[in-house]
Length: 188
Image (cartoon, rainbow, N blue to C red; front, side, top):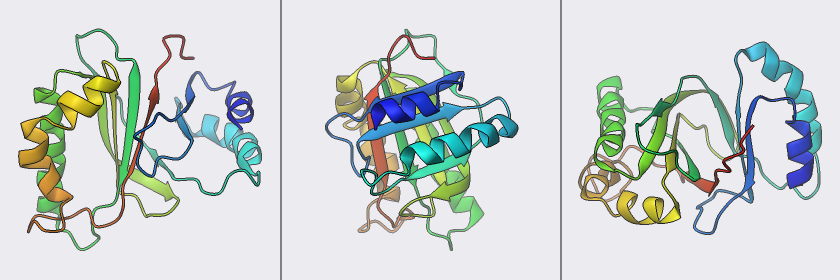
């Protein structure tokens, strides 16, 4: 399947197609990140991609389309890519959603193992949830994700409250898709 998806995305200038690493949560077996200069390019690739994943081996696909440009730090590029797909509860007011997004962005200021990041609202979602946000990062390495990021006080004090059903600020009520993989230096 990995080879089929790589072949289907061979014409995409910015394609990441890698097996997920242990520790991914609802992240599947393969993480695919495709970046296009315009929507028409995706429209030419989409039928080939859809055909590649139309296989009995594929039991579920979670994904999202979204815009934006990653913010790249001055640190050396990271070797691990992480995508978090999440759904903010539909009745959440816009001011609360903005505070939630601001708290997610705080992570990038305080966690030195993040070398690149992008927080985007979803244009369209595929999969088990009506995803509303995609938060992607590159990390120095797996330890930088699993240690300094997930265990950082800014994560526990500000961010986790939005995901914790025992906290009054709880807005992410569905399961999340936390998927990460190696980020090869020879990425197309």
